[in-house]
Length: 126
Image (cartoon, rainbow, N blue to C red; front, side, top):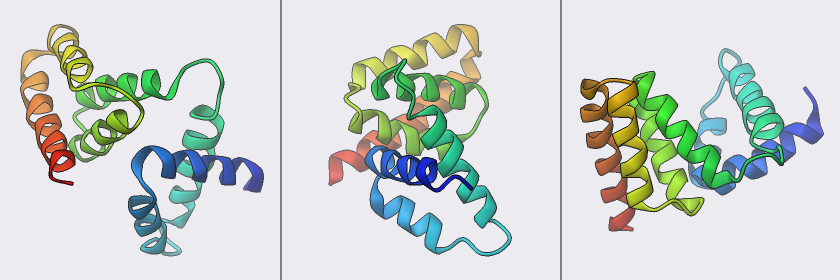
């Protein structure tokens, strides 16, 4: 593991999806799934999210579209909240999901709108 890239990824990961969420994921990891947590932190968050080419907001909106099409509801909820943290608006998230309806399919968008609405409601409660 590249410690510098891991630390960079850890900082980005916490800034996007929240320190509480990340700390819980790492604290609950064991010898079976800790290698995955390290991989995600180092490569997803450090090597890719840490690149200069796109803003965090743009990366968040891209993730929403991809996670919606891949039918990954848990991750979609997490990244919807992260998108708000990164400056995306409710309207921008809605427009991404409208795009998903056309290119990923209406059933996919219906589920994704429901999940995103839940995430936005949870944010509003805080």
